[in-house]
Length: 338
Figure 1 (cartoon, rainbow, N blue to C red):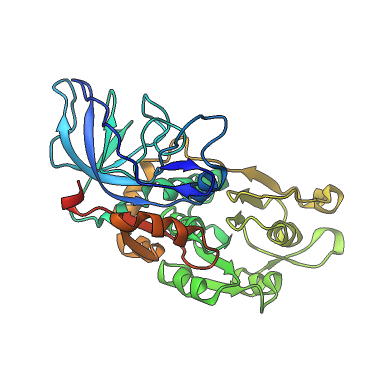
Figure 2 (figure 1 turned 90 degrees about the horizontal axis):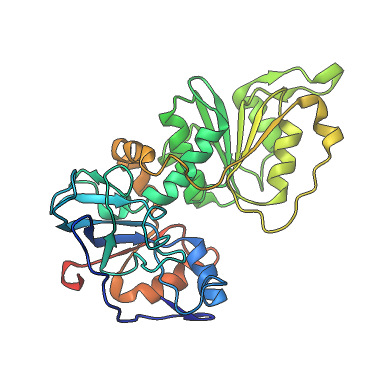
């Protein structure tokens, strides 16, 4: 857990007592989010006082079921909703974190606090459930469906998850844009139809070639026939490119975190009637996305770049917070550590 600014340490704690309505989950894998690095840098989550437990991307095995709990059995493999626990958000300011051998789910109900998954789903893939729910919410917010032509900017974990999500929603053609060749190769492996290296190609012209063209407003240049633009990159140039390219009533969905303000010329985009939608968290998607992960596990596994044992979780945090060093780092727990 984070004990002070720029310091994350292993700390011995007492597991909360489980009652008749509770479930205890032995954590088998936990992904590292960019927010974990932020909490470490800040020394916790202001205004929370004291040490901050880390880890909100867990998957694990049920080792105790309270007598009044239904829909769960010892030995079940599960993914967890970190937002639902009674003692606060797991790993993001609550009393417990999933970068620990065990977590107690209070008043545990299937479909609310946890969902049972197949035993053969790899732990490191199951641990993608929470970040992929963020991606899936972006897909849902976009309104994309059967026949949609889509472009995703940013081939990090959320962008790749969105690309898979769009395909599972029936999108006809999915393009992924990035500047890192290895990420673009990974986008093709997860099922993107085409990729664009925006450092080397004109994105708008390439989209026209891939998705076709529609006439511009009142004699203006033609626009790509792309229906949905999704920003998973979080840089101003993405917004500017999408607004320049958007056809009439296209949708721009922003799931990325923008750390600086983005200037938009509303006069320029007025005639496009573009629909700009923000996307945050996963109001309903935490277990909706699980179906996609189970069905397309062979694609999702490409999102995990590094698997690190729990004994080296401190190294995993450094790796995950070093720009360009890794894409998605997952910490795995050996049975002997639980």
